[in-house]
Image (tube, rainbow, N blue to C red; front, top):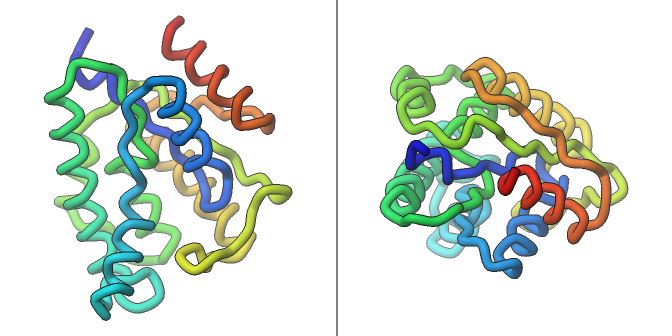
Length: 181
């Protein structure tokens, strides 16, 4: 087994239950890596920075790239199954949804730093979607983001496994079953 086969992505649109699933997997004993976007937003707001999705999206994407590469290298050095709340390819999807050019170095990063070939996709789910201080996207933007992630991961040769619209515990069991089998 290739070392990157232990690295599993949970992706999807905002407000689709990714972070709750990551938390449940952590409670089941799995190692997890947090989402870059939310942490960067909190840091940038805290310091008065402008690398925010509502201020400077390109700079925000570059900070996400740095975060994801650091998380990737940290995870690769470990010898256990790890779940990521998004990964390097998500940055491509984000830039596309924003209508921004995707710099060649971000494409190269997505092609170079590979994860398990199966990517778990949390589909848009209106019943659980809500906005908050860091998540300012509309429902339409959430749906467009999910579609961009499916397209991006598919174009990079990943197999997209759609998560069922069930409880967090059932989603965690679904993911764990796929990883074990």
